[in-house]
Image (cartoon, rainbow, N blue to C red):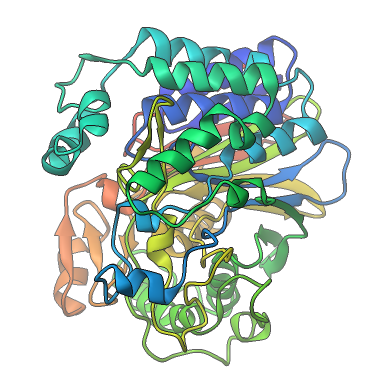
Length: 497
């Protein structure tokens, strides 16, 4: 009842809970936990990434959304990328870097809702970056999997060598950057030492971002998309995020019978069908609403949809949620886009820059085509749900292209099957992969073998595979307190105030 935090790394959850114990609220706790994740989960997130959040303040009648997404640089044109020898956007490197929004997003959240100010929220992250943190088995696996290209660059080789589990990683330059954010706020990150380092590093590597680009606004308060799902109201973020895709899947799932939603082969066929209705709409319509009108109706009308959905790049992300004794709930997702982002570190800062620009298209006729200052269609989507007009749950998952599918399964587990949050996030899952062929099926999913044989192109994965995302969730219990769960597919935990 005093507050709770669920995060994909135990050090982050504990940092958030400690902030609650010191008198902070759920927003303070979420920012502190996220800052720690920017240190201890470098393969998934970074200060140099983007951040999206839904906040339901205590006493408010509805939530508010924050879209923290930096745009492409002023030099970012289709012609500029093609002149550098590319027919499609590269997967990493300086051309994929978009302006990081996370520092501003932290600041906007704290200045509007926070209680303690920024400095105490950075303390745990600063300490871990300066003194070091133990490498988990999962992080070690990513360090080894990506070692070939990480070790080819002096900056990434120095910061993220292929260490064994239990060994320590340090990033003292990142500690100094986080300390500056805590002391001076977010603005100097863009206009001062760090911003100058970002621009200089990208100039050396023939990037597309200028100093003026870092001074443009990166965050926007928005009204969430609200859709009904049985007796719930579910809140998602509007474009440029794929929140409409998640909402569209829920609108169609609500029309399904209980038999069609039964875990096993029935739900597998339902998931494929609904995904194939909604994802082509995402490719057809979703982009930056500042550049193009994005219609909501096709997503929210179950009669519309279908076609072909080209594959999106897969990516890595963190999701966390927090709640406090006053009833404030935070659903927050943050990312460096792909594994270790662009692979470009702003020299002398310890900041790994995101490769969010890889989601742009170089097709001039595509709605999500690359243009200067444009925000790409964004995969990051936190979610909230209300019952009877009262906040009831926060949930979300990493998983890039698959996030709408994972969210749908989480909500079914929580709302229809009555699982508590820990069981809901741990339950075996399905996912249509980015290529759109077959299913990824965790080995312990009901009728896993039957599902894999029945859906052409399917692949059986080990139980609790990271390819199914790692989710967190919290739910209001019947006593007026909160209960939460952290996904065993990551290194997370739940911590109480």
